Length: 222
Image 1: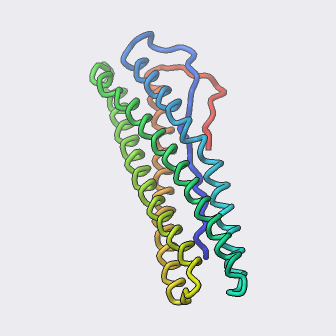
Image 2: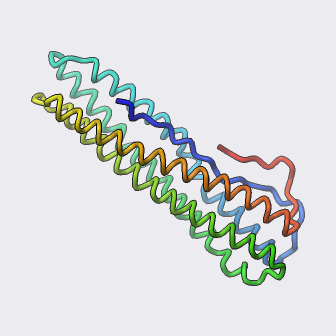
Image 3: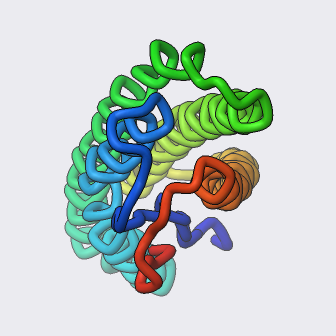
């Protein structure tokens, strides 16, 4: 079918504070940004289960297309298994989405701190950081909607497999829809990862300019 994808999500970089500005706007922003990372833990936790679910569906699909109509009962059983798999993935995607929403709520708190930054360069960096993060949240929203649309098309596909009178033209038309849909998912995922990487770079630059020292063992989770 050619529709299987792996959503390789770049997770926000987390840093451990060593010393900072002791209650300054910059330090308050640092606390907000690091709490934003913690709010996305739920997002990170869903990545492996989602990837496993995608692999499982591909395996079920491959089994189905190898069967002939004499084995229709088995096709129906495998299709039902695939539908259950998709339902489970929908739950994982919702958990992921809620985690990003919580992250966004936390991140928006920087608005009240940014205006109090004295250094114009640091203030501009904070504003750039905010714009990038807003673009990242928008990219994830597009990814979420595109992925849900693709899952809906997947479910339609497995319902078609359960139709004993299914015509090849009808099946191919549905597969074409799915492949087109997943191309949108891939593009949205690439943009989300691009914005995440840029945000991580800008956050490092902001910490450096604001003289917020962080531990050397910080990691960029992927």
